[in-house]
Image (cartoon, rainbow, N blue to C red; front, side):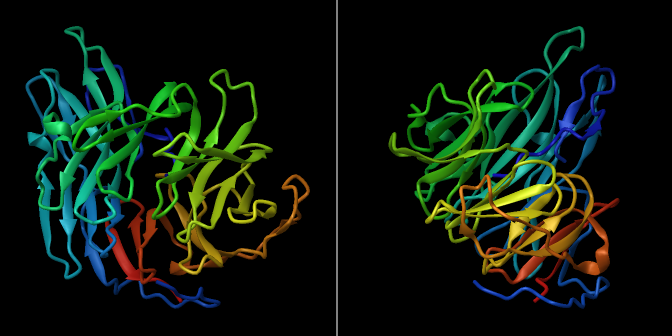
Length: 382
């Protein structure tokens, strides 16, 4: 899972002083691009805050919604599902979603599907009024839905997991892992787990803190960047098995700026070690490393893992999209890996976009346009 930043903020609770941070298959990669922006395959003309492709290419997405009460202006996102034919249905009417007795606003930070494409994890960022003076508190929660819009209760309890950020399912479609803040704001996290049938599970990694944790596709393992709670030690790249206490240190990093991502095959991992350098490492041969000077941004892997598609801006910030060719990974300690400076290949006429995703089968590219934040789907440039 990649972490959103605190860059964009919106005052949803006007009388309050607190602001909620907004976060808001195989193919070859093109050498030349021709893309007609006037003819997307699909268009969703809504104010999109988050979206995700399902394994079968359906799209779940959230839409920003405001409404008024006697005391406050609130924001509660709706959640919708669009099937491959373009038919849509609302899974959650935000205005009717409430927890507790205090008013709150929320925005959908992330949406994730279960491997079987039936369950949805909606990560919410919330601002809640905590006392009569209007004092507010920002927090995280995860809402569980199925693809029919029914709320899924954990162990016959609530459909919400409190204090849960960046959630994801294991391949069993029952076990959910998530991050809980250990050092605020959103600096270090503890790794926690719960099961739909029995509730919270004791973690083998209790007491350890991480910058980021990303699942390895089709496995019970994750890749994580670990750092001690005092933040005095180095960043360590770890592989953790979530169903046992088995863990392996993969590397000690020269630095860590974010962007941890595992390739679709689970054989490679990439991350930014600073604001300029992307490091790519072979998980099957750990001393095979490459470094690329591409500038900090958000990236997705091409289906054949020979390229990355890079948005040259942080999460929920607008930037252009470019293909970056990945060099051959060579034996290196990492510290002495040669640095390449690949030539970016622009797509979609070099226009800026707020968010993007490649479909699991590698056939489609979805983008959220700057300004209106509508969602457009195109064939992935080949």
